[in-house]
Length: 334
Image 1 (tube, helix red, strand yellow):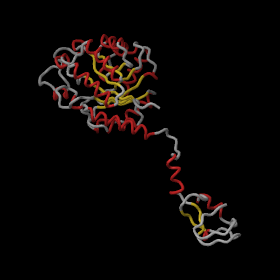
Image 2 (cartoon, helix red, strand yellow; image 1 turned 30 degrees about the vertical axis):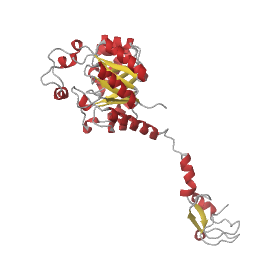
Image 3 (cartoon, helix red, strand yellow; image 1 turned 90 degrees about the vertical axis):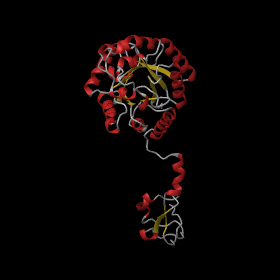
Image 4 (cartoon, one colour; image 1 turned 135 degrees about the vertical axis):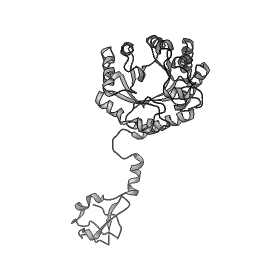
């Protein structure tokens, strides 16, 4: 059974540099991610000039800089996208990007992205949701900042415009960087899955790997986590991102947890079967017993190895005549 889809969220951690973006692809592929995802936008279509930055963006960026100016420096050209698509193909990792406007989405779809990723901020953007639904691709919907009614409304728009619910994965997410543990509320992920009848996943902004691993244990089929080459680089998302070695550790841990989850059938493994004779007990003679004597409680005991009659059949044995002589500690036979 395939494991969770792990998305390395490169986002805007390229800082506008193609070389850095290519290195992020390399890092994501080396770490074992399934997808490396960027962000595609034109600042003029996304924000009104003068729009302030989020608190975390202000903290980790240029003081006093507007959101518009910050985003202008993080745009990627069509040529950069094409170079990234080619490089992903060479490295054996899927390319994707989150589009923040319809034209950007059209460009990405033409480049062959495997699914539409809807970011949390667009969950209430009806024209955007409608356009996304009409692309004929599976949809992964992040739900940061939303309540259940808003998620239901977004799903309804997607379904009414052509996306089957089976082709939608809803990601639980907390849209503040970094997310504090007490803000995660990971049980909301499973609540959405139960209430909405959709596959669920988790988009993580905590520091560390504990929560993504827990999400997989709770049934997440998609894990998204920010990746940076260096957390100390300037830019809005680096501080809440994982560096390559940490990301690789997370991927390994997720795959270990998936292996440990198994298929849910309670049964002994082959190695446990080999342990049974060593660890379990058999019914043995507590004292010398002569042929024809009847087995009684005081004449029997339970000891290892477990190669004889199981102690669970104790009552069946009581009162039966011994079929032969037994010495003390000899394993009883039928």
